[in-house]
Length: 636
Image (tube, rainbow, N blue to C red; front, side):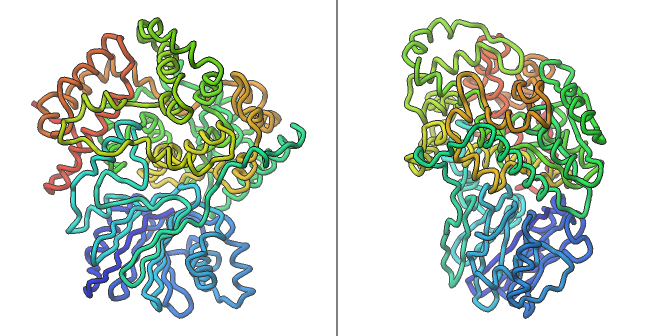
């Protein structure tokens, strides 16, 4: 795992080595083991390295035989040994013992910008082709690793994180107001937008080619759900057995490393399956890591202990009562742009725990989107039959007081009745929407409104999967957008904050190929979710875990915001502070706080998002002024 950055100039000026080093220095947490840079007149590439494979010979940047092709990489290439053998047969000469990054150099020399099509892994790659004066950027097909770029007249710059691009002297701090609207709608900013108007995210499965002052984007991979006529129809046990072996193959590939590999274990089906497979496929004892909370409904350490005992893992757990007010500023700083998934807090803590023992860990992201694990998919199926009746019950449901627990029943019912009558895509978004269009209009100052509908990014993706069944299309928008721009951002930033590499075996082409071809009944039927996955892994994890409810690293945010976190919330979202920042109407924010504290509504997700934005603003202002970016709440 690494952090990469670079600059290519087309205005005749050479790259400033000190600027390149300053950009690279912001990424040291992603690669504390070594760093390096290469400058070829108008082009400069730099990397910070977390040494995982070929510890002695894999320092970056890496060049080819004649030095004209230079590569830096963030990620891991799991089929690098097979590709290396193929390239050696074609006459390429390697200088390192088994660096996966050097494979990229020769693969590019052989195939040009189409080299990314051959890769099995998670990666963000930059290639400088000195002979052609060409820069090629590539991002893996599932969007596991991040890559940002700024393309303005005379210069293209890129980096693994926004904080590196913020070192560019001419970068505008002007916010993209459409991105702000999207953040309020989703609690994350969906690509290709970023919070800054000048910066964009390279989409998953794409390459960017910058040559002769022109830039083009090309899609090289699109993991499309199968058409209804192409769904798999083999007997249930045969499909379950095939899935189990595909998962085993993926875990085996993801265990390849020259350092110990662990597993983040929540006690749910996904992480338990990964633990079981890792323990049986690894030659060494596997370490597992779990986080629990004092609030029993949010703590699954007992289930995690069950699977850890079954496979004899080196188990580590931490039951905490974290000081969220102390952690939130550091978490906001790690994300670089507004991000408000509250499960970032336990992910931060479990990554901190794991990093004390290993440099690499497996995580279960992707299982829900591929195999149908969310309750929203059940709601989508139920709404097909009872959307009209749900709307009639809406007035009664709205009178229910706000409950407590992981996801209170009243919260689910209100969400269901408010959206059940809508078309499929809008209904699906309605289950999860943070601020509705009307709520955003009340919240944002008139001069801070965007002009585009945040849901348009979902509509564009939806239009590309016509012919697949409705549930598969909804899973696809979740996998391509929510997973990429929320869950994978969360796992990447929270793990990298502690120099820990997280790998996600569910997001492997072999696993996805089968998942995308499963019939609806293998994913969701009635109230049952992940049906085939549960059957496939039950022999590995036991019935209690295989048939249990969804687990994850979540927190009791609603209770905290009515208890120990309420003073911090009122401070961070105080009227004077909001007026100074200049984006939100203080009266609208105060109403959200009061309705939540009085249990009239569960506004925890909305308040968490607003706090995240306010803390991010503090950090941005400190960075612009040159003050220490401590991100502490304002006092007095």
